[in-house]
Image (cartoon, one colour):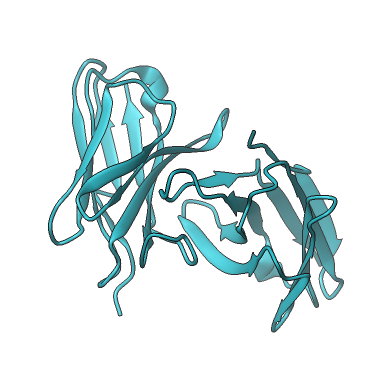
Length: 113
Length: 113
């Protein structure tokens, strides 16, 4: 059974650009959550999607957005990139509406220069 | 409110037991998790405990939960050099039906020969 797949693994972008990250959850899982990890702020919740609907959102500016497709794959988009957006972005996959088991992907390392 | 705290560092000798502690504030937490993160990698789910349990054992790992004091601990028996990593505790509390994990700051475990 394949795990959570995040692509790409590494990205370098310039300030002001926009970026799209992708997450394919474990087969059969319908909940996908996104987290940002930085040395200063630690792991912070971005948002969660379940059956193509955003159910929960963290305290991030509107530049951060996401969506989920009918096959449960999710994308996250960051527009007008800032240096402070440099981080490891992690995606978590859960079977259902309760987070009994949340499995994480390897993450996408985004560097903004 | 949600706040999860951990000590930042722990150093043990190979073969000894390690105990990593965590305190949380949200009394409505239903599940509490331990994740392991190795350098450059994502989060690996080690174990989790439901809030109505006091203890859970899984091979070398023992999780203790004191719900009254909102204290969670992870004991690793016979600690090996491969256990060197950052360990995160996380709590899940239902927030309008969505999935959201609140993470601690992480404890860096160093295993010395």
